[in-house]
Image (tube, rainbow, N blue to C red; front, side, top):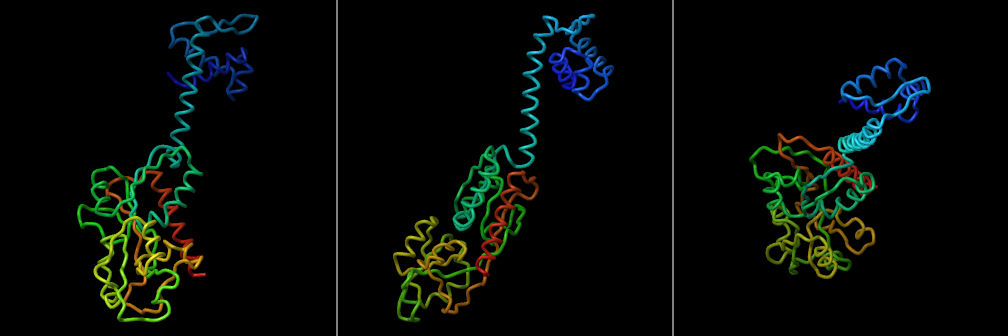
Length: 299
C-alpha cells in the first residue's frame, strides 16, 4: 500500500472536498480522484460517499482513517529517526579511550555532543590499550583513541591521526627541580600507561628517578599525586592545561632530556568496518579540540 494514497485519504477526510484537498496537496483534482479510487480498489470497499451534497466518509472509511493517521505518524517518526541517525544525532555509539585522551578530550567533546545530539546514546570505556584492543576486535566497541605505537601489528586496523600532543614533564609548585638541578635526589616517576615506558626519556630520567615508573591509569589520582608529592609526571601539557594556567602544576623545561617533542594521538578502528555517523561526529569533535589546545599553547 502506497503511503501517498493514505496521505491523500487523510487530506480528503479533512476537507471533504476534492478540489480543496487537491489544492492542499498540490495535485490536480483528477489525480486525487484516481488516487482515492486506487486506494478503495485495493481496500475492496468504499471509503467515501460522493453525491451532490458533497463528500463524506463511510463508516468503514472512518475506521480506515484512524489506522491511516496512526500509520502515517509512525512513518513520519521513522523518517525523522533515519535522518537523525544518518546525521549522527540518534542511535548508539560505543567506543574506548585510553586514560590520557579520556581526561583531556572526553569531557568537552561529550558535552558538545550531548548538547547537539541528546538522542544519541554514548557508551564509553576508559581503559589501557591492552584492555581496549580485545573489545575492538570482538566488536564490543567501534573504535578507541590512544597514543600511537601501543597496538599489535595484526589484524589490520585503520589508524587515523587526530592530532599531536606535546610530551611534558609535570611537577608540583615548589618542586626542588624547579629551582636547582640535583643529581643526588631520587624522585618517583608517574605514567598513565605501560606503553609510555617505551619512551627514551626514561634513560635520561634515571639520574633523578627512583626505581621504575609508577603506572596509574586514573588521571584524577595522578593529578593529586603530582600536586602533593615530589613525583615527576610524564604526560602532556594538554592534560593539565587548567592546572598549569593556575600555576598549581609546572613544567620541567630546563632539564633538557632527550624527550620526544610530541606524539600522535590516533583513533583506531577495524580496517573493513564502516564508520558510523556518530563516530564521524566524535572524530571531528576530537580534532577540533586538539587544534584548539594547540592554538592555546602556541599563544
